[in-house]
Amino acid sequence: MDPVTESLNEVHRRLSGLREGQVADYIPQLATADPDDFGLALVSMAGHAYRAGKADVPFSIQSVSKPFVYALALSDLGFEEVRRRVGVEPSGNPFNAISLEPDTGRPANPMINAGAIATTALVRADGPAERFHRILACLSAFAGRPLDVDEEVYASEAATGDRNRALAYLMHSAGSLRAGPEETVDTYFRQCSVRVTAGDLAVMAATLANGGRNPVTGVQVVAEPDVVRTLAVMATCGMYDGAGEWLLDVGLPAKSGVSGGLIAASPARFGVAVYSPPLDASGNPVRAVAALGEMSKRFGLHIM
Ligand code: DON
Image 1 (tube, helix red, strand yellow):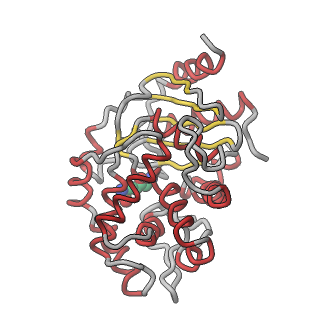
Image 2 (cartoon, rainbow, N blue to C red):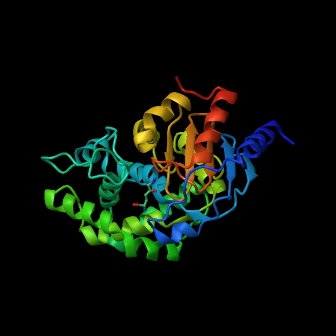
């Protein structure tokens, strides 16, 4: 067995028994996840994939979609125009908080729900169908294969997403949402329901680590300057109100999601992804945070 797979297997073995955290249930369909599912995947800049545990179990991407859609909005509109509408400062608040500037209604950053909803509305399109089509095509290009939507998760999010609707209406009333609130949250719910595996997410993270070029397919998905900005925002805001501790302990740009997915990018080295549904109080997957902490120490990954 190669040394990378051996290390992933060892981290998997050591953390399989960790029984902390709660599976998210505010979206009812997410509560059906198996708390014992645990998979790790790593993709190198040469496009080699390494896996341990359940790296092929499908789950909805949720907030891990946010950096990729931000990169798409950056490539559509340019950084200055996007920054005028979505900030780049950590909010220090939970992911679903009303973190909007009082005068402008501009959300704090694209990694919290308000900012992600505003970012979805920025993706260039003639209407919501084309907007979602472009988002799905972008996520698929990052993953290097055609992705699809988990319709059950989508229906469950749409049925229980009043808080996100409220955020969209608040931004719309302040003039900071570029499309209609209902169509935008619907697109955002679809975006969050796109089905991936830890193996897919590792390719997506590796594409960020590789300056926007998918190391498996060779496709340049977004331009390098937009990836650099995306990684910077992930570093400061990707782990919500746990972002400071994360940067201190692990030291890599990362993004987590409520279904239990987490990506981290080691620029010019590799992308890594973990799937494990139980979450800590900030909404970050417990085993994934522990796994990246171990890997960072073992391989000296801290960027500082
Ligand atoms: O907006 C929501 O509540 C979910 N669709 C996504 C949130 C999410 O993944 C936040 N992550 N920790």
